Length: 128
Image (cartoon, rainbow, N blue to C red; front, side, top):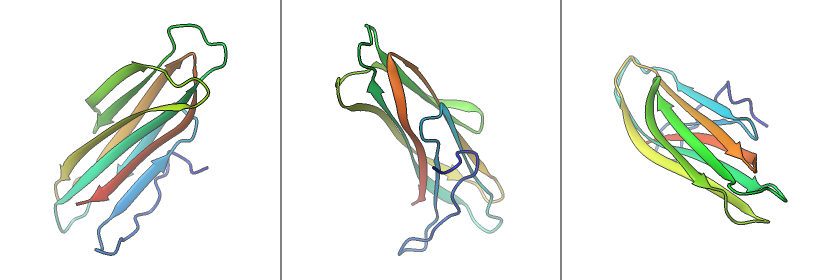
């Protein structure tokens, strides 16, 4: 399992664009910090994914929530019922962000559960 506090170094796709990710596994918080580029502005498509499973015998209500913060400010937050007994359920959020030259970008995904267990928490950023 990758340490969510230390993002994976960028990889260049076929187009040479940056890709960053932070995987927290079953932990409740993941943080991805994209360091600044002194030469240019960049635009990223960012995806936050939280996967859970309803606990056997969990009473109602069972739910899971995901909050995405960008540079310390709330970007998005949602709490939903945990469905699909015997399988997994997820919350996903995608958005774009322009990062000015010389500025870092910090994305934090925070989760909470009731009657569910965490399976995966992932943040990915791909340059447009």
